Length: 388
Ligand code: NIG
Ligand code: FE
Image (cartoon, rainbow, N blue to C red; front, side):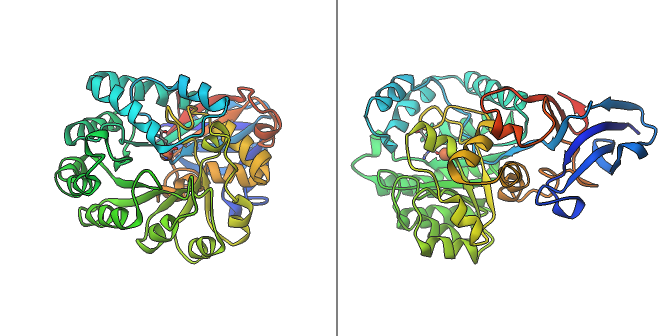
């Protein structure tokens, strides 16, 4: 039995409101014990028991590891030139995805896995202890299958995104591509994926195509996610809710009917402020979603086109500064909210029974994540109580 403890925690943010003050369930002057990688006890530093290994946090803030529920880390190349052009006026469009598809097809499986590992390590250094990883830059049966194998080397939260965009070779017969996705591609990919996702958007897949793809994925036992209402106010959010998706992501352009549909469902709205930042978009109406009672997560959307960052601290800062969340709401959305988006009850919260995924800040409060943007405040990271 391994007993690890953390003490002299100035501000313990559990992300469980039943365990302390406010939405973040804050306990001050706190201590924490994990047994065999799981949280076993939360209390006051004055009552810290004997442990095998003790970490003195010196009055710093301690949070759950971030749960990044939306990443695209399996690709090759980059699109710095596209970003450069965008910053001087060229608008973002779904078509840029095809540039990364060409580079990804030309890369070996080892190169794809190495790039995913590089990004997962970069995320971990910034406090991300659980991440989701999508395919979606292969768009052939074999390139999607090997993308998911590469994704599976960095996480169990693998997502099939063969319906990211219609590849160039199917440009004049998109329904044939949808047939391929629903048939041979899902047959080859479903064994390597937990989730299926569709980019529902002008220039990608329409609602009828998305419904067929999500139905085919559901039949194979995959959980459902969707990219919807990123660039236009279409019917994607309502379709995802109707189909019982765990999460609908982006949600940048929403009408009242979309918000009502989300509020009366169990679908999480996973917002990706990094994409809005890097495409000079307006931000998702996070305040309206929260006020309507929708469960909101925030995620990095790390990908080479619209959001080439792995930084969850940056997402917290953007959610606060640009979307009107309080720092506590933003940290909750980046931890417990991400866990809800992935339907995980073992991570995202520091509570007895949960995995001891813990980050220590070089700061006394979670507020500093938004107050000191761009500063590397995540100073220590543990996964299952082991230092990483
Ligand atoms: O989530 N929206 C679709 N997919 C990505 C962008 C992919 C790309 O531009 O390469 C996103 O923003
Ligand atoms: Fe995305």
